[in-house]
Image 1: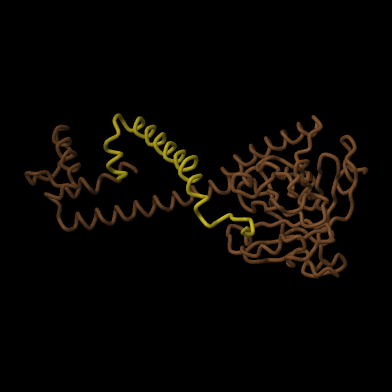
Image 2: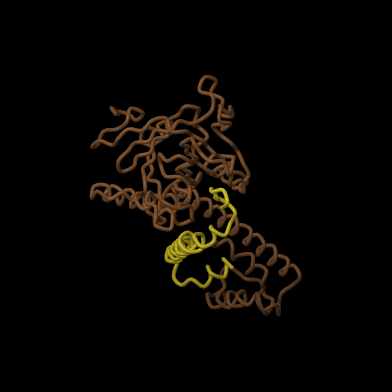
Length: 298
Length: 52
């Protein structure tokens, strides 16, 4: 898109009377040449070389344009989606703090058993609890939202509906984006056995610990219950969020938490799954933090 | 295409450059805020859940 770009066309387009263009030609004649050049597409005066030149230039420009558009898409994925997602995350976080301050627990409907024997429904897209993972940074915190649809996951890590709530027997399962969209689970692969995963609800702090062998640091080590710290599975492996992970149909006795994200980064070929088990529960008192977090006393 | 656009922009060189900058900005904004958000959910990237 420079001045140079238009020169070849004019060069390839001699004036109609065949005279060469002189530098001292009057302006009007230059204008006439320009007009002729504009009709390059009409084909009436185009030689074979002109067509080839036109085709090559067109191909080149199309390829460069495609490259720039794809680069722009990468910028969008890695940067623009994070800006939007951060705004959404701040909104759900503030809303959750407000509800807690007003004495409302968004998890309450999920704990209610309706007359028909089913659990109440928590609306999707609203904040339900806060997540802290000290291994991923002292300032790492996200508000978990209800639901794993695209819109909910753009706001923050999403709780799989129909899985257990924090602290309940069964499997509290949460999905989160790895790259872009706030990327809450970008560094989920940094977790080691025994790392704390802290969940804050209106009334309690739940401290889960990543499974695996704490002594050897082996995430693949399956303990007595047969559940490892980490698994890489196919996207269709729904058993990882079963009440007893990987054992669908079994009645749960443990209080588990499962996090799912895409694996490897930038692709959706597989899922990385991190399993943790509830290690302790402390009541939420004022603004005090549990010992697992910096400055914690509870 | 770019040659055609450049030739049809009115004004002198600096005026043309300004218009090109504005055009690029407008197309980028259209891509970033309209086309990509529409396209992205249709692509098989960035899926983080196990299928339910």
